[in-house]
Image 1 (cartoon, rainbow, N blue to C red):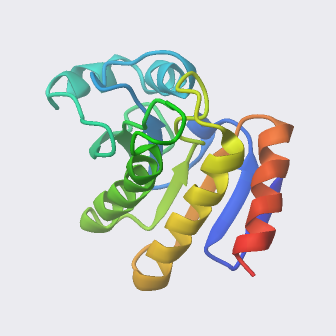
Image 2 (tube, rainbow, N blue to C red):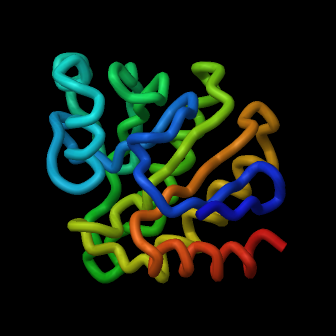
Length: 176
């Protein structure tokens, strides 16, 4: 399933590791050495070269992003970003989550990347409510794209029909 919104934003339900884009974003942990969820799936699909490269990156702080090669992935690059753990929303979580999206897009522009796919950052094991994360992600990306014509397409790749439907609902409100 895919839904095109405003030409430059697309929402799909599927496997981010199968997308042939310039970069996919990894919802990583601070070590960047792999983990569960989308992080583990990306590391498994990319192969051992990704782990070897991420060992050289020195980890990553919450809200920041780092870039690596894509190796065995169809994507040319992986942008690793560390989302916040949900602590009720009063510990800077919204600002840190928005920073994940912005910093990832800034890296894409700095590396001349035109197409980028995001998972739903922090909404898995980190517990960020997707009902709050989705509109924040959509608003942050829309604001960035409004100011930066260098990125041709941003894909939000959900994992499951419920998340896909929620992203579509929020996008209908935000991307009018």
